[in-house]
Image 1: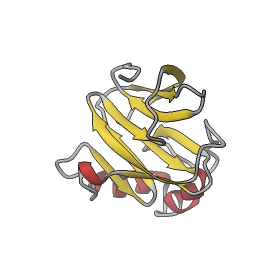
Image 2: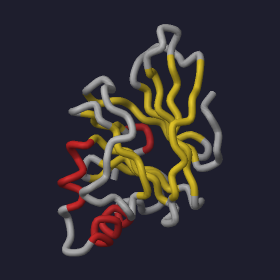
Image 3: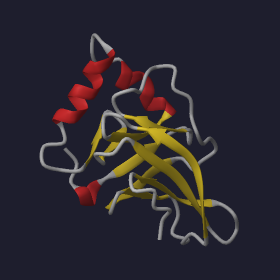
Length: 149
């Protein structure tokens, strides 16, 4: 299990998938493409998490999607991690069971390329923060509907 200070989102292709960690299937499609590639630090924040893609702070936030999360867990992952995550078990629910075992007492974890956060709510909002040049500098996933700070 990753410690909260060591969370990182790996984006080898720059194509971001987001959704309920218990309902990620092989046919999931990216919500954002063309993001920078590499590993990016993530921070657990009140109501969710935030991923820092650049050092430039956001000057504007925009909500991209409202995600149904009936399991209470939301996940971010690169399209390249989807096949490995959805091939872990014999049935679709097996992947989520393996992921949820990694949480222990924590609220966020990285497992098989999936960055997941526990929120206990039925909905999460995916937002992006744009810097002064218009590029995406932050990605926020919040259960409370917050838009970033």
